[in-house]
Amino acid sequence: MAKWKWEGLGKDGKNSKGEIDASSQREARKLLRLQGIRAKRISAPSILELDLNELLADWGLSTPVTNKELTHFTKQLAIMINAGVPILQSLEILYKGQANPGLKKAIKVIASDVGEGKTIYEALSKQKIFSKLYCNLVKAGEVGGILDEILQKLSEHMDRIEKTKAKIKGAMTYPTIVLFVGIAVVMALMVFVVPQFQEMLTSSGKEMPYITQLVIDTSNFFQENFLYIVLGIFAAVGGFITFKNTKEGKVVLDIIAIKLPLFKNIIIKGNLASFSRTLSTMLGSGVSLVDSLEICIETIDNTVMAKDLMNVKEQVVRGKSLTEPLMKIDYFPEMVTQMMKVGENTGNIDQMLEKVSDVFEEEVGVVIDTTTKLIEPFILIFLGGAVATVMVAMYLPMFTSAGG
Image (tube, rainbow, N blue to C red; front, side, top):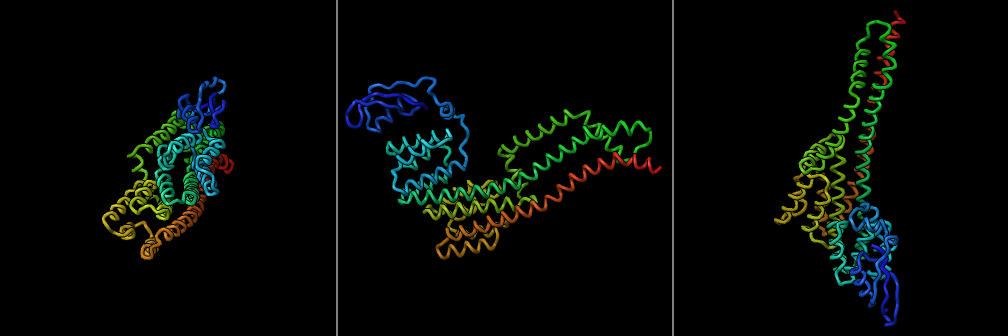
């Protein structure tokens, strides 16, 4: 996308000229027509005038749009619509102030589609960066004439969901990083520290204690096969990532994750918090229960839980209440299903689900703090034990010799 220079008749019928952002001459003419300008001549931009970031966005090579950027865009759009700014003008303002090339391109296409008479929902649906949840809520807002309220609610919803995901990701990342650091420390001791002692100990000619000989043999193995070990670690990590990205691999890992003693509560409650808040937002916006459940299931990151909730949706389609099949899921807390049942009976299921999501989010925070506190002692014991074992093994022959 670049600036195309044009000359022609303006809205007032007088000769005029200017510049317009477009990805092609055809698009430039179309945009000018929408503005009521009749172009006589359009000049292509020179290579020096091309915006590299926007060019990469046109080729699909720009940086992906983050949830934070999308949330910020949604919040700003809600504020401008609430202030009475026309939708096309709002999109134009957001386009000019947008830094991410991918989102900037999407806003421009959306503005073009809306200018041609399409609804905002139809324009958003054509862009991959907007989820099915996002598009359906916008559709509900358009139909109900409360687009600004829906967008504000949507931005708050996205912000809360992202914070919950960040907590879960942080809880899973911390032990992984420490594990790799521990492995690196042990390898450094075996490759660089132990050999310094080894020559001094073997030169004495005395028989080594069992633990010392074991550490020396381990160190020799690391030194002789260091390159293979490093390559093996990279191959294992690469294989794990590849396996994780396959459909079968994700199912296997999700089954394992939901059964891990330390992390299963984080995964279960984190996903249930996301499910409850999304369902609350959808129902509160006027979307039907069945459609809401279908969209909410797509937000579940664990395939085992998604399958269970898909069964819940099927039971609801057959005429059962929402809480009845939820009670049969063993990891769904009974207190929560009772709260939801009250909401169904009183007709305030969306408000009750919002309270349920608050409960789950609070519990996720507590579980993460507890899990972190439980993991830290094991990490200290592992690292301290590894270093202590090597040091004792190296100094034990010296102490034995001195004692003898």
